[in-house]
Image (cartoon, rainbow, N blue to C red):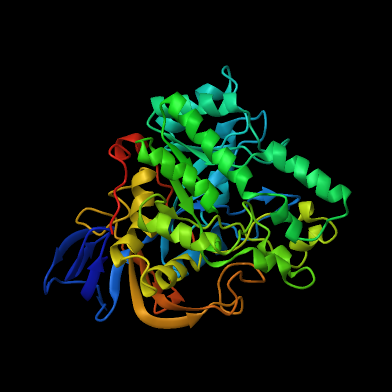
Length: 471
Protein backbone atom coordinates (compact mmCIF):
# COMPACT_ATOMS: atom_id res chain seq x y z
CA UNK A 1 0.00 0.00 0.00
CA UNK A 2 1.37 3.38 -1.04
CA UNK A 3 -0.01 6.53 0.58
CA UNK A 4 0.67 10.18 -0.13
CA UNK A 5 -0.14 12.84 2.48
CA UNK A 6 -0.21 16.24 0.79
CA UNK A 7 -0.24 19.90 1.82
CA UNK A 8 0.24 19.37 5.55
CA UNK A 9 2.14 21.35 8.15
CA UNK A 10 4.58 18.80 9.55
CA UNK A 11 5.47 19.34 13.19
CA UNK A 12 7.94 17.19 15.13
CA UNK A 13 9.76 17.86 18.39
CA UNK A 14 12.32 19.95 16.46
CA UNK A 15 10.79 20.80 13.07
CA UNK A 16 7.89 22.85 11.72
CA UNK A 17 7.51 23.03 7.93
CA UNK A 18 5.13 22.41 5.00
CA UNK A 19 5.71 19.31 2.87
CA UNK A 20 4.23 16.09 1.51
CA UNK A 21 4.92 12.62 2.91
CA UNK A 22 5.11 9.45 0.81
CA UNK A 23 4.60 6.12 2.57
CA UNK A 24 5.47 2.79 0.97
CA UNK A 25 4.20 -0.09 3.07
CA UNK A 26 4.78 0.55 6.76
CA UNK A 27 7.45 3.24 6.63
CA UNK A 28 8.01 6.78 5.45
CA UNK A 29 10.15 6.74 2.31
CA UNK A 30 10.07 10.31 0.99
CA UNK A 31 9.39 13.79 2.39
CA UNK A 32 9.39 16.73 0.03
CA UNK A 33 7.61 19.66 -1.57
CA UNK A 34 4.84 18.96 -4.11
CA UNK A 35 5.54 15.24 -4.42
CA UNK A 36 4.03 13.65 -7.52
CA UNK A 37 4.35 9.94 -6.88
CA UNK A 38 1.89 7.17 -7.76
CA UNK A 39 -0.13 6.27 -4.66
CA UNK A 40 -3.01 3.97 -3.79
CA UNK A 41 -4.37 6.60 -1.40
CA UNK A 42 -3.97 10.37 -1.26
CA UNK A 43 -4.79 12.27 1.93
CA UNK A 44 -5.17 16.03 1.72
CA UNK A 45 -3.94 17.57 4.99
CA UNK A 46 -4.37 21.17 3.89
CA UNK A 47 -4.92 23.42 6.92
CA UNK A 48 -4.07 20.58 9.34
CA UNK A 49 -1.10 19.61 11.47
CA UNK A 50 0.74 16.42 10.55
CA UNK A 51 2.38 15.07 13.70
CA UNK A 52 3.95 11.82 14.93
CA UNK A 53 1.50 9.36 16.43
CA UNK A 54 1.17 9.77 20.16
CA UNK A 55 2.95 7.39 22.53
CA UNK A 56 1.33 6.65 25.87
CA UNK A 57 3.91 4.81 27.98
CA UNK A 58 1.58 4.16 30.93
CA UNK A 59 -1.63 2.15 30.41
CA UNK A 60 -3.32 -0.71 32.24
CA UNK A 61 -5.47 -2.73 29.86
CA UNK A 62 -7.28 -5.80 31.18
CA UNK A 63 -5.58 -5.46 34.56
CA UNK A 64 -6.79 -7.29 37.68
CA UNK A 65 -7.00 -4.91 40.63
CA UNK A 66 -8.99 -4.64 43.85
CA UNK A 67 -11.24 -7.63 43.21
CA UNK A 68 -12.15 -6.60 39.67
CA UNK A 69 -10.47 -5.92 36.30
CA UNK A 70 -9.94 -2.69 34.37
CA UNK A 71 -12.77 -2.39 31.89
CA UNK A 72 -10.81 -1.71 28.70
CA UNK A 73 -9.08 -4.70 27.20
CA UNK A 74 -6.53 -4.47 24.37
CA UNK A 75 -9.30 -4.28 21.77
CA UNK A 76 -11.46 -1.50 23.21
CA UNK A 77 -8.55 0.34 24.83
CA UNK A 78 -6.39 0.56 21.70
CA UNK A 79 -9.34 1.57 19.51
CA UNK A 80 -10.05 4.39 21.98
CA UNK A 81 -6.35 5.34 22.00
CA UNK A 82 -6.34 5.51 18.20
CA UNK A 83 -9.39 7.78 18.20
CA UNK A 84 -7.38 10.17 20.36
CA UNK A 85 -4.27 10.12 18.18
CA UNK A 86 -2.17 7.60 20.13
CA UNK A 87 -0.50 4.96 17.95
CA UNK A 88 1.68 3.17 20.52
CA UNK A 89 1.13 2.21 24.14
CA UNK A 90 3.40 0.59 26.69
CA UNK A 91 1.31 -1.49 29.07
CA UNK A 92 2.26 -3.26 32.32
CA UNK A 93 2.58 -7.00 32.74
CA UNK A 94 2.36 -7.99 36.41
CA UNK A 95 4.50 -10.60 38.12
CA UNK A 96 2.38 -12.24 40.86
CA UNK A 97 4.37 -12.40 44.08
CA UNK A 98 6.73 -15.36 44.07
CA UNK A 99 5.95 -16.32 40.50
CA UNK A 100 7.72 -16.14 37.16
CA UNK A 101 8.18 -12.88 35.27
CA UNK A 102 8.44 -14.78 32.00
CA UNK A 103 5.10 -16.48 32.61
CA UNK A 104 3.60 -13.10 33.48
CA UNK A 105 4.87 -11.73 30.17
CA UNK A 106 3.25 -14.66 28.36
CA UNK A 107 -0.07 -13.85 30.05
CA UNK A 108 0.05 -10.27 28.81
CA UNK A 109 1.06 -11.35 25.31
CA UNK A 110 -2.05 -13.52 25.28
CA UNK A 111 -4.19 -10.59 26.45
CA UNK A 112 -2.99 -8.43 23.55
CA UNK A 113 -2.66 -11.02 20.79
CA UNK A 114 -5.19 -10.48 18.01
CA UNK A 115 -6.86 -7.57 19.81
CA UNK A 116 -4.55 -4.56 19.63
CA UNK A 117 -5.28 -2.02 16.90
CA UNK A 118 -2.05 -0.10 17.51
CA UNK A 119 1.49 -1.13 18.37
CA UNK A 120 2.40 -1.91 21.94
CA UNK A 121 5.22 -2.80 24.28
CA UNK A 122 5.39 -3.97 27.86
CA UNK A 123 6.93 -2.93 31.13
CA UNK A 124 7.19 -5.59 33.85
CA UNK A 125 5.81 -4.88 37.31
CA UNK A 126 8.29 -6.63 39.61
CA UNK A 127 6.98 -7.87 42.94
CA UNK A 128 9.70 -10.42 43.70
CA UNK A 129 13.39 -10.38 42.78
CA UNK A 130 15.17 -13.28 44.43
CA UNK A 131 18.78 -13.65 43.24
CA UNK A 132 18.40 -17.33 42.36
CA UNK A 133 15.13 -17.34 40.40
CA UNK A 134 14.00 -13.88 39.42
CA UNK A 135 17.23 -11.98 38.75
CA UNK A 136 18.06 -14.28 35.79
CA UNK A 137 14.52 -13.75 34.51
CA UNK A 138 14.85 -9.98 34.68
CA UNK A 139 18.11 -10.19 32.76
CA UNK A 140 16.41 -12.29 30.09
CA UNK A 141 13.51 -9.84 29.82
CA UNK A 142 15.94 -7.06 29.02
CA UNK A 143 18.36 -9.03 26.83
CA UNK A 144 15.97 -11.19 24.81
CA UNK A 145 12.35 -10.15 25.22
CA UNK A 146 12.59 -6.42 24.52
CA UNK A 147 11.18 -5.52 27.94
CA UNK A 148 13.70 -2.82 28.85
CA UNK A 149 11.75 -1.27 31.71
CA UNK A 150 10.42 -2.57 34.99
CA UNK A 151 8.13 -0.88 37.46
CA UNK A 152 8.47 -1.23 41.23
CA UNK A 153 6.17 0.03 43.96
CA UNK A 154 6.77 1.82 47.22
CA UNK A 155 2.98 1.70 47.76
CA UNK A 156 0.32 -0.99 48.38
CA UNK A 157 1.91 -3.03 51.22
CA UNK A 158 1.18 -6.74 51.01
CA UNK A 159 0.23 -6.51 47.34
CA UNK A 160 2.79 -4.69 45.20
CA UNK A 161 5.19 -2.97 47.61
CA UNK A 162 8.83 -4.06 47.55
CA UNK A 163 11.60 -3.06 49.95
CA UNK A 164 14.50 -0.74 49.20
CA UNK A 165 16.93 -3.61 48.78
CA UNK A 166 14.79 -5.04 45.99
CA UNK A 167 14.57 -1.65 44.30
CA UNK A 168 18.34 -1.17 44.55
CA UNK A 169 18.92 -4.68 43.15
CA UNK A 170 16.57 -4.03 40.22
CA UNK A 171 18.25 -0.72 39.44
CA UNK A 172 21.64 -2.40 39.33
CA UNK A 173 20.39 -5.01 36.86
CA UNK A 174 18.75 -2.34 34.73
CA UNK A 175 21.98 -0.35 34.66
CA UNK A 176 23.92 -3.41 33.45
CA UNK A 177 21.52 -4.15 30.61
CA UNK A 178 20.59 -0.72 29.34
CA UNK A 179 17.23 -0.78 31.06
CA UNK A 180 15.23 1.61 33.20
CA UNK A 181 13.35 1.32 36.49
CA UNK A 182 10.00 3.09 36.72
CA UNK A 183 9.00 3.95 40.26
CA UNK A 184 5.59 4.34 41.85
CA UNK A 185 6.97 6.61 44.53
CA UNK A 186 4.79 7.02 47.62
CA UNK A 187 5.56 6.01 51.19
CA UNK A 188 2.97 3.24 51.34
CA UNK A 189 3.86 2.14 54.86
CA UNK A 190 3.06 5.56 56.33
CA UNK A 191 0.02 5.98 54.10
CA UNK A 192 -1.40 2.69 55.41
CA UNK A 193 -0.99 3.97 58.96
CA UNK A 194 -2.88 7.17 58.07
CA UNK A 195 -5.60 5.11 56.36
CA UNK A 196 -6.03 2.88 59.43
CA UNK A 197 -6.47 5.97 61.61
CA UNK A 198 -9.10 7.42 59.24
CA UNK A 199 -11.12 4.19 59.12
CA UNK A 200 -11.01 3.93 62.91
CA UNK A 201 -12.56 7.40 63.04
CA UNK A 202 -15.36 6.33 60.67
CA UNK A 203 -14.04 8.33 57.72
CA UNK A 204 -15.08 6.19 54.75
CA UNK A 205 -16.12 8.65 51.99
CA UNK A 206 -14.17 8.87 48.69
CA UNK A 207 -12.46 12.14 49.68
CA UNK A 208 -10.50 10.32 52.35
CA UNK A 209 -8.61 8.52 49.61
CA UNK A 210 -6.95 11.87 48.94
CA UNK A 211 -6.76 13.05 52.52
CA UNK A 212 -4.86 9.92 53.58
CA UNK A 213 -2.25 10.24 50.80
CA UNK A 214 -0.41 13.53 51.51
CA UNK A 215 1.91 15.13 48.98
CA UNK A 216 4.80 14.72 51.43
CA UNK A 217 4.41 10.93 51.20
CA UNK A 218 4.87 11.19 47.42
CA UNK A 219 7.79 13.59 47.76
CA UNK A 220 9.53 11.28 50.25
CA UNK A 221 9.13 8.35 47.86
CA UNK A 222 10.49 10.34 44.92
CA UNK A 223 13.47 11.51 46.96
CA UNK A 224 14.22 7.96 48.11
CA UNK A 225 13.85 6.53 44.59
CA UNK A 226 16.31 9.08 43.21
CA UNK A 227 18.80 8.40 46.02
CA UNK A 228 18.64 4.65 45.40
CA UNK A 229 19.13 5.19 41.66
CA UNK A 230 22.13 7.42 42.27
CA UNK A 231 23.69 4.76 44.50
CA UNK A 232 22.98 2.08 41.89
CA UNK A 233 24.40 4.19 39.05
CA UNK A 234 21.12 3.96 37.18
CA UNK A 235 18.62 6.38 35.64
CA UNK A 236 15.17 6.41 37.22
CA UNK A 237 11.73 7.31 35.85
CA UNK A 238 9.05 8.53 38.23
CA UNK A 239 5.55 7.58 37.08
CA UNK A 240 2.39 9.72 37.44
CA UNK A 241 3.99 12.58 39.37
CA UNK A 242 1.11 14.63 40.78
CA UNK A 243 2.34 17.56 42.86
CA UNK A 244 4.91 20.29 43.35
CA UNK A 245 6.38 18.69 46.48
CA UNK A 246 7.42 15.69 44.37
CA UNK A 247 8.45 17.80 41.37
CA UNK A 248 10.87 19.77 43.55
CA UNK A 249 12.78 16.55 44.30
CA UNK A 250 13.10 15.75 40.58
CA UNK A 251 14.24 19.31 39.79
CA UNK A 252 16.88 19.20 42.53
CA UNK A 253 18.25 15.92 41.15
CA UNK A 254 18.34 17.10 37.55
CA UNK A 255 20.01 20.37 38.57
CA UNK A 256 23.03 18.39 39.78
CA UNK A 257 23.10 16.09 36.75
CA UNK A 258 21.34 13.02 38.13
CA UNK A 259 19.45 11.24 35.29
CA UNK A 260 16.02 11.44 36.90
CA UNK A 261 13.03 11.50 34.57
CA UNK A 262 9.35 11.86 35.30
CA UNK A 263 5.92 11.90 33.76
CA UNK A 264 2.70 13.55 34.80
CA UNK A 265 -0.85 12.83 33.62
CA UNK A 266 -3.80 14.91 32.36
CA UNK A 267 -5.74 14.30 35.58
CA UNK A 268 -3.10 16.22 37.54
CA UNK A 269 -3.03 19.03 34.96
CA UNK A 270 -6.81 19.52 34.71
CA UNK A 271 -8.50 18.06 37.80
CA UNK A 272 -8.03 18.84 41.49
CA UNK A 273 -9.05 17.85 45.01
CA UNK A 274 -12.43 19.63 44.74
CA UNK A 275 -13.72 16.78 42.57
CA UNK A 276 -13.72 14.54 45.66
CA UNK A 277 -16.17 16.93 47.29
CA UNK A 278 -18.89 16.23 44.73
CA UNK A 279 -22.18 15.17 46.31
CA UNK A 280 -22.97 11.58 47.23
CA UNK A 281 -20.54 8.99 45.93
CA UNK A 282 -19.53 10.97 42.80
CA UNK A 283 -16.04 11.53 44.16
CA UNK A 284 -15.31 7.83 43.63
CA UNK A 285 -14.93 8.48 39.91
CA UNK A 286 -11.69 10.33 40.70
CA UNK A 287 -10.18 7.80 43.10
CA UNK A 288 -6.79 7.12 41.54
CA UNK A 289 -3.27 6.95 42.88
CA UNK A 290 -1.65 9.35 43.45
CA UNK A 291 -4.77 11.26 44.37
CA UNK A 292 -5.84 14.56 42.82
CA UNK A 293 -4.12 17.51 44.51
CA UNK A 294 -4.91 21.11 45.37
CA UNK A 295 -5.44 23.16 42.21
CA UNK A 296 -2.38 25.38 42.62
CA UNK A 297 -0.14 22.41 41.81
CA UNK A 298 -1.33 22.45 38.20
CA UNK A 299 0.62 25.52 37.09
CA UNK A 300 3.75 24.13 38.72
CA UNK A 301 3.37 20.93 36.69
CA UNK A 302 2.86 22.90 33.47
CA UNK A 303 6.05 24.82 34.25
CA UNK A 304 7.80 21.51 34.84
CA UNK A 305 6.69 20.34 31.39
CA UNK A 306 7.83 23.56 29.76
CA UNK A 307 11.24 23.50 31.44
CA UNK A 308 11.83 19.75 30.87
CA UNK A 309 11.81 18.82 34.55
CA UNK A 310 8.89 16.64 33.44
CA UNK A 311 9.45 14.88 30.13
CA UNK A 312 6.23 13.01 29.36
CA UNK A 313 2.46 13.22 29.66
CA UNK A 314 1.06 9.70 30.00
CA UNK A 315 -2.42 8.71 31.17
CA UNK A 316 -2.17 5.85 33.67
CA UNK A 317 -5.34 4.73 31.86
CA UNK A 318 -7.03 2.22 34.16
CA UNK A 319 -10.82 2.50 33.80
CA UNK A 320 -13.39 1.04 36.17
CA UNK A 321 -17.10 1.61 35.63
CA UNK A 322 -18.82 3.77 38.21
CA UNK A 323 -21.66 1.26 38.47
CA UNK A 324 -20.68 -2.14 39.84
CA UNK A 325 -16.90 -1.48 40.00
CA UNK A 326 -16.31 1.87 41.73
CA UNK A 327 -19.35 1.07 43.87
CA UNK A 328 -17.47 -1.83 45.45
CA UNK A 329 -16.20 0.83 47.86
CA UNK A 330 -19.44 2.61 48.58
CA UNK A 331 -19.00 2.03 52.33
CA UNK A 332 -15.18 2.06 52.44
CA UNK A 333 -12.96 4.23 50.25
CA UNK A 334 -10.13 1.67 50.45
CA UNK A 335 -12.27 -0.76 48.43
CA UNK A 336 -12.83 1.66 45.53
CA UNK A 337 -10.75 0.37 42.57
CA UNK A 338 -7.99 2.91 41.95
CA UNK A 339 -7.91 4.28 38.42
CA UNK A 340 -9.64 6.32 35.78
CA UNK A 341 -10.08 6.56 31.99
CA UNK A 342 -8.09 8.92 29.81
CA UNK A 343 -6.23 7.28 26.91
CA UNK A 344 -8.59 8.77 24.32
CA UNK A 345 -8.49 12.35 25.58
CA UNK A 346 -4.78 12.90 26.28
CA UNK A 347 -3.72 14.55 23.01
CA UNK A 348 -6.65 16.98 22.84
CA UNK A 349 -6.38 17.89 26.50
CA UNK A 350 -2.65 18.61 26.33
CA UNK A 351 -3.00 20.59 23.10
CA UNK A 352 -5.85 22.61 24.54
CA UNK A 353 -4.24 23.28 27.92
CA UNK A 354 -0.72 23.61 26.57
CA UNK A 355 -0.54 25.04 23.05
CA UNK A 356 -3.92 26.78 22.82
CA UNK A 357 -3.40 28.48 26.18
CA UNK A 358 0.16 29.52 25.42
CA UNK A 359 1.92 27.38 28.02
CA UNK A 360 4.04 25.33 25.57
CA UNK A 361 5.03 25.42 21.90
CA UNK A 362 3.77 23.07 19.19
CA UNK A 363 7.17 21.37 19.15
CA UNK A 364 7.05 20.80 22.89
CA UNK A 365 3.51 19.40 22.54
CA UNK A 366 4.85 16.74 20.16
CA UNK A 367 7.82 16.11 22.43
CA UNK A 368 5.83 15.45 25.61
CA UNK A 369 3.12 13.38 23.91
CA UNK A 370 5.37 11.29 21.65
CA UNK A 371 9.06 11.94 21.11
CA UNK A 372 10.34 11.97 24.69
CA UNK A 373 8.56 8.70 25.48
CA UNK A 374 10.05 7.17 22.33
CA UNK A 375 13.55 8.23 23.38
CA UNK A 376 13.24 7.33 27.05
CA UNK A 377 11.74 3.89 26.39
CA UNK A 378 13.86 2.70 23.47
CA UNK A 379 11.48 3.29 20.54
CA UNK A 380 13.20 6.23 18.80
CA UNK A 381 13.62 6.85 15.86
CA UNK A 382 11.33 4.03 14.76
CA UNK A 383 8.57 5.83 16.68
CA UNK A 384 8.12 9.37 17.90
CA UNK A 385 9.09 11.35 14.81
CA UNK A 386 8.30 11.93 11.14
CA UNK A 387 11.42 11.03 9.20
CA UNK A 388 12.48 8.87 6.28
CA UNK A 389 12.82 5.30 7.55
CA UNK A 390 10.56 5.79 10.57
CA UNK A 391 7.32 3.88 10.98
CA UNK A 392 4.45 5.72 9.33
CA UNK A 393 2.64 6.39 12.60
CA UNK A 394 1.08 9.72 11.68
CA UNK A 395 -1.78 11.86 12.97
CA UNK A 396 -3.64 14.45 10.94
CA UNK A 397 -4.67 16.89 13.66
CA UNK A 398 -7.15 19.75 13.32
CA UNK A 399 -5.83 22.50 15.59
CA UNK A 400 -8.90 24.67 15.04
CA UNK A 401 -11.70 22.19 15.61
CA UNK A 402 -13.49 22.02 18.95
CA UNK A 403 -15.18 19.10 20.67
CA UNK A 404 -16.86 18.48 24.00
CA UNK A 405 -15.59 15.49 25.96
CA UNK A 406 -18.36 13.16 27.10
CA UNK A 407 -18.94 9.54 28.03
CA UNK A 408 -21.79 9.60 25.50
CA UNK A 409 -19.36 9.94 22.62
CA UNK A 410 -16.06 8.47 23.80
CA UNK A 411 -14.89 5.00 22.77
CA UNK A 412 -13.41 3.85 26.08
CA UNK A 413 -15.36 0.98 27.63
CA UNK A 414 -16.37 2.86 30.75
CA UNK A 415 -19.59 4.58 31.85
CA UNK A 416 -18.20 8.00 32.76
CA UNK A 417 -15.59 10.55 31.76
CA UNK A 418 -13.32 12.36 34.20
CA UNK A 419 -13.57 15.37 31.88
CA UNK A 420 -17.34 15.30 31.24
CA UNK A 421 -18.54 18.47 29.51
CA UNK A 422 -15.07 19.97 29.04
CA UNK A 423 -14.68 21.72 25.67
CA UNK A 424 -11.28 21.37 24.03
CA UNK A 425 -9.76 22.74 20.86
CA UNK A 426 -7.57 20.36 18.85
CA UNK A 427 -9.07 17.17 17.46
CA UNK A 428 -7.57 14.06 15.86
CA UNK A 429 -9.02 13.62 12.38
CA UNK A 430 -7.06 10.83 10.66
CA UNK A 431 -4.59 8.31 12.08
CA UNK A 432 -2.13 6.02 10.33
CA UNK A 433 -0.48 3.13 12.14
CA UNK A 434 2.53 1.75 10.25
CA UNK A 435 1.08 3.12 7.03
CA UNK A 436 -2.45 1.77 7.50
CA UNK A 437 -5.29 4.23 8.00
CA UNK A 438 -7.07 3.21 11.21
CA UNK A 439 -9.00 6.42 11.94
CA UNK A 440 -10.47 8.31 9.00
CA UNK A 441 -12.40 11.55 9.51
CA UNK A 442 -12.96 10.55 13.11
CA UNK A 443 -14.21 7.03 12.32
CA UNK A 444 -12.47 3.76 13.17
CA UNK A 445 -11.60 1.88 9.98
CA UNK A 446 -8.83 -0.29 11.39
CA UNK A 447 -8.73 -3.92 12.36
CA UNK A 448 -8.12 -5.42 15.81
CA UNK A 449 -4.93 -7.45 15.60
CA UNK A 450 -3.17 -4.92 13.37
CA UNK A 451 -1.04 -3.79 16.31
CA UNK A 452 2.34 -5.45 16.75
CA UNK A 453 4.41 -6.11 19.84
CA UNK A 454 7.49 -3.89 19.68
CA UNK A 455 10.71 -5.10 21.25
CA UNK A 456 12.53 -2.09 22.62
CA UNK A 457 16.24 -1.34 22.40
CA UNK A 458 18.87 -0.22 24.91
CA UNK A 459 17.32 2.64 26.85
CA UNK A 460 20.39 4.10 28.52
CA UNK A 461 22.11 4.85 25.21
CA UNK A 462 19.24 7.23 24.46
CA UNK A 463 19.39 8.79 27.93
CA UNK A 464 22.99 9.94 27.61
CA UNK A 465 22.83 12.83 26.99
CA UNK A 466 19.48 13.31 28.63
CA UNK A 467 16.36 14.22 26.66
CA UNK A 468 16.63 17.87 25.68
CA UNK A 469 13.93 20.46 26.04
CA UNK A 470 12.30 22.51 23.30
CA UNK A 471 11.03 25.87 24.39
